[in-house]
Length: 302
Image (cartoon, rainbow, N blue to C red; front, side, top):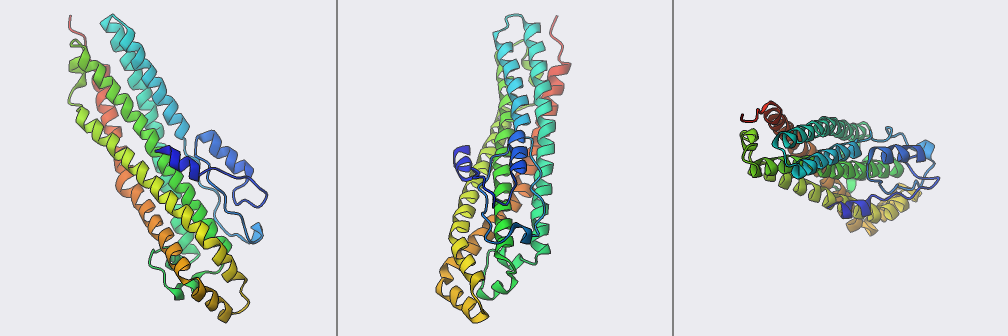
């Protein structure tokens, strides 16, 4: 799933890149896939955009999940039942840490999505991002550089969404591994409580589906930006309204498909957070809390 996104989101660092080298380093530290930079056709000083997206602690989620899986693996090797239970309690502890960090990640996704929306409305660029572009919407385009900067930020946000869904899936993998082991040891099976493997599999499927959808939207956005950039620069360089109109008329299909593809993808990305990623996180929180409570409180039969 991540292969497509990582191909799209690789960074080429150069002096004219929108995101500074320092910002790129922050993203690496937090495990955010790098995103291709939009090379500015105008001086950077002319770009009145908000700062870079807030970093997402994806790597910390996967590290905690990895520690949990290691604890489960250790439990599988132990012969003594009480030792197995102790190792599973440790696994649940790491799963809880991953979940707490996941909540922070999802909240930050919401902040970033809201920030992009605020930037679009602040620039009064809504007609350019609604997915139903018409030629007279070009009146709203004050700066090609600003528009492309927003598109690049949407691409970054889409990469973050993909990364988070993958990290959340690693938490679900931990829960599944714990339940599998509890099921295989009759003395520990009651600690499962009412956790259902089918429920966990459903959550995993949801995470995988959203990740694949984000990959697809990132591909669409990247392709649209590539098509739009040359004609937008040509349009902005045109010396008069008549010349600008001519540029649009000569490249009408490119403008229409490019703006519409970006707008529809942005609409989907916004919806992913509210309708899929946040509800998925909420369900994971409940499942981790439920299973952790059962495992921690379970008393072995005497």
